[in-house]
Image (cartoon, rainbow, N blue to C red):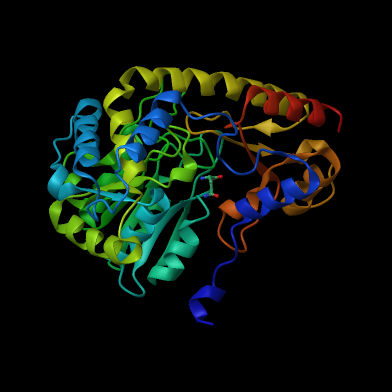
Length: 382
Ligand code: GLN
C-alpha cells in the first residue's frame, strides 16, 4: 500500500451518512438534497438519452455545455471566456479540484488553505504532494487576520485555495477580503484555486464575487464550480474548471487520463438547464433561505450557538451550552444514536491535531422541510 494513502483518512462526512442509515437518523451530515431535482433538468436528461447522446463526449466537455457555461459566466460575472480554450467539464467539482492540484503542484510545494475547510482538500494535497499551510478563520464572521495570511505566503507558495461561499462555515468572502488575497497572490506570484460550487446559494442580499474577476487575477486563477448543488443533482457528477489557456492545457491532460470525461447525456441536460436557469436561481435562494430559518430556529431552541450562514447550506453549531461531556466526535455519535439526527464532527474541517472544531458540529439544511421538521422535533426532545 502506498504511503500517500496513509496520510489521510476516510471521509468523515460519508462515514456519518453510513452511521445515520444504520441508526435510522435524519441525515443532516452529508450535504445533498433528499428532495427531487427540478423537473426541467430531469426531462432534459431523459430526452438526451432517448436522442442517443450515449457515447463519450469530447474529453474536455460537450461543446454546447462549455458554451452555456461561458455565456453564463459572461452574463453573471462579466468575464469573457473562450469555451474552446478555457472551460473543462469534469466529474464533479471533486475531480476538478484534484485535477487542479495535480496539474499545478510540484512535490513539496506549499498550498495555503483557510480553515475550517472542506475535508477533500487534505487528501487532494496528499495525493498531489502539496504541503498545506493553514490560515484560521475566526470569530462570528469567520474572518482572517491579514497578518496571519501574509505570513502564510512565502517563495515556496504555489497556490491558495479559496472556497466561497464556504463549506462548512457559510462565510461569503467580501470584495475587500478577496482584494487582500489577490494582492498577495500577485506579490508572491502564486496561483489561486477557487471552489465556487455554492455560487448561487446566498442569503440576506449577499453577492458572490469570483476572485477571477479582480484586476490581474484571471491569468492566475483556476475557478471550479458545478451543477451538483445548484441543480440538486449531486449524483450526476458534473463539475467544471475555468482557467486561462496555459493552465487549461495542463488541466485537460490530467482530466483526460483520470476520467476521459463526464457522462455525455447528463452534460447535454446540464447545457439545457444552464441555458434556461436565470429565473430559477432566485427561487433556489428563497427555498434555501426558508430551510436555513427552520434549522437555525431548531438548533437555537435546542441550545446550540450557531454561526448564521451567509451562503452555502451548512450551519456550524457550538454545543458547549448543551452540557455534553465529550468531544465533537463523541457528541456526533450521541446525536446519531440517541437522538436520531446526524451531523458531522467539527474537527473534520480543521487541521489534524487542532482542537478548534472540538466543540462544534456541522449540520446541513439541504433537506426537505419534513426532514428538517422531524430533526427539529428530535432535537427538542434531547
Ligand atoms: N459537499 C458535501 C458535504 O460537504 C458532500 C460531500 C461528499 O460526500 N462528497 O457534505
